[in-house]
Picture (tube, rainbow, N blue to C red):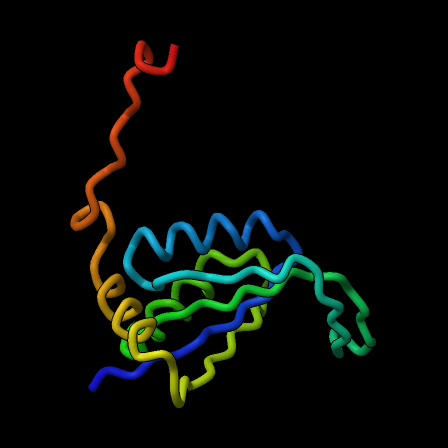
Length: 124
């Protein structure tokens, strides 16, 4: 049975994370992402201690897609060494698990029809 994983990624720019998440969801690499817009990160870097405000992304995906998510983050992230941490999901709501498995592993443009464009005369 396919397992789920949460992938956490930090970045300085919340909008960069939002756009990155949209691309991953569109490409079927994640079911969704939750963005915490403001966290405080304290870390060692270049022989000093940094104290910065960042945003945190929590992606929900299947374990088999984690290598592709890590590769994309490594390639597209603006940081030299992006924080990408994978957490195993040991249990979840079965319906939520089924949904994550259903929407990952395929591109959404292949499987989800575009929403209808409203008729402008009907809105008048």
